[in-house]
Amino acid sequence: MIDWLRHCDRELFLFINSHHNATFDWIMWQVSVPLVSLPLYIYILYRIFKKYPRNIVWYAFLTIIVSVGLSNTISSEILKPIVHRLRPSHVPELQKYIHLIRNYSGGMYGFASSHAANMTAIAVCTTYFFTKRTISYITISWALLISYSRIYLGVHYPGDVFAGILIGICVSLLCLTVFGVISQRRK
Image 1 (cartoon, rainbow, N blue to C red):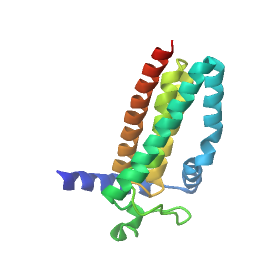
Image 2 (cartoon, one colour):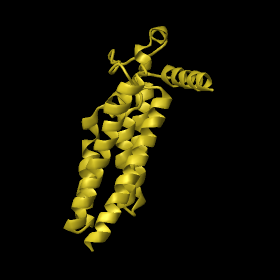
Image 3 (cartoon, rainbow, N blue to C red):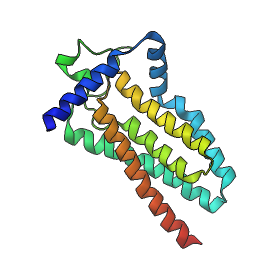
């Protein structure tokens, strides 16, 4: 069963990574640069400050920061060193089939995707804090685009990205639960 899942993961990766062109190469490269998301992060923070009273603003801010911090720690500092799953860009038998942009191959290990985990955590928190669905749709779409870009760029298998998404969801829901408990006690 595990071998079959690895085979499917590899084949899906090769399928996604093989469908490329110069325009999408540029777009996917830009999407994966963390600073490109900065205007979205600033907008989210601005909207939180505008919508909530000061005591709730700090809980919201801390919830997002802790969610991203924990997601990043779990994916980068815990799972990657323990699982030791090579990124596809570091697998010798795949290298002749992979389309890399700017020869970027990422670090040695890829399970789980920190980009996917971190942006998913932001998207889940944003969805919780805003009843206006436009903001939620934007952050969820952005998280999915960033996640897809990691496969497109050749640095993650779909399984790495899926695991990152799950980490982001679970961690942010845990942090939102803690946020809810704390904010209820403060009332």
